[in-house]
Image (cartoon, rainbow, N blue to C red; front, side, top):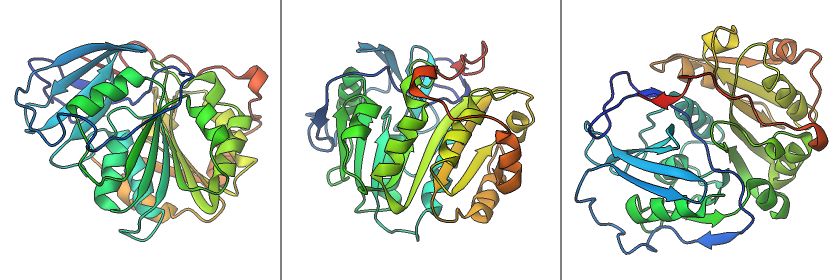
Length: 324
């Protein structure tokens, strides 16, 4: 979610921010961002919107008229990513800020991390981590290879960012990844406006747990509304695999008043919920951090999702996420 009244290019404002990635692709193609593009380190000379049909939709890049080298990426009309090439630590969307708060608190400030990102978009969080935790090694898995090409061409990463992009399906990549190889797994994968079904099962969660180190942290962007028939089984599945869980969402979402994003955090070690609560409460759109008994009450009698029963996350109601 971005600031009200924000203009993009010649028209439009973000009503609510959503990150999503395209439907799965079977190829696994490493793409060396940062120096690979012939446009690398060049100024974007004309701040005009552009549109391109990629592998799984129509991607648009729209310049932010208020920030010189900032861009909004949408796919099929859904806001997916916002990046400021001059200020990579700037996080525009509220749910992205919450993901950033988790990344800020998983380790002491400035410590380099090994991070696996499932879902790429415009590489908002990889850029953020490269700026706030220099020396981090990051793999970004994005199914839409055409989108990877678009981002590499028009929003290139700086040299030495330590980020490698891979054109692959998120779960297939996760299943092939070495055990105990990541400090953090960030999941922000949407097909259209929905989390793909094969990324909602407890078998998928088990693969994420396998890839994480003993003190690692899993963090995911999800979306739902009351009675939380999607979110509750997700929490139930991760609760069978991780000792600690937390959920970050706006009070209106938690109270069932509207559809919205919810950030899931899972770990085998204590989560610094006090620090997360302070940070999220100070945001322009404050959020609550649920954990312990309150989260167990939310889970209730929900059961983990099996692969054979998995379905995508619910379709957002009309107008929930979009550019007007």
